[in-house]
Length: 157
Image (cartoon, rainbow, N blue to C red; front, side, top):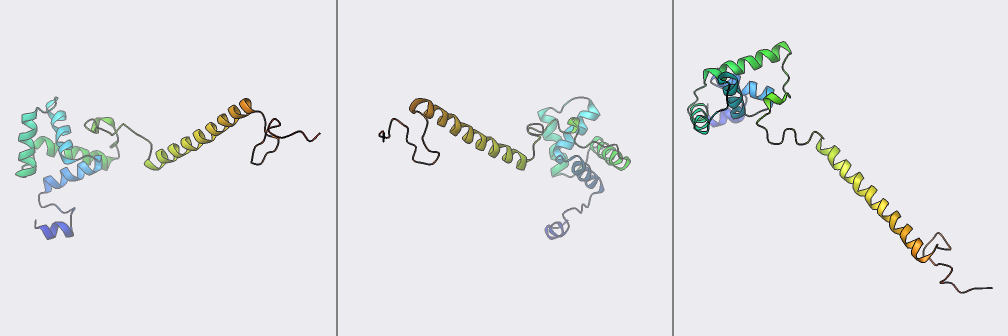
């Protein structure tokens, strides 16, 4: 596929096996290499060694050779999605993600909670400081600034 064809149709794939792998990876919201790792572990019952990672990476990504276990795994994922039984967010599919379970709050919600915490902390700190000041110097005679205590004003009696 030429560069311009890829720009015009990025979802188009010449190799149907690779197209299925890309589709399955998109369904699970993982990368293609992560899908390769998942398929290998599912097929062989163990994790890939560093040498196997390099070997399979080169074969799949550089030479376009789709391993049979990856093809089988991708077809199974697509079939589960078609049957409505696929749980794409399951932890078994995201065990290689570093930050998948780190934060479940949406970014906007997290920012809102930080802002509310800061405002509550500022208001609470201000009230605590005002209370401390009143205990040290005495109560103000008026509610508006400037704050004068009875000791600071001369007696008008």
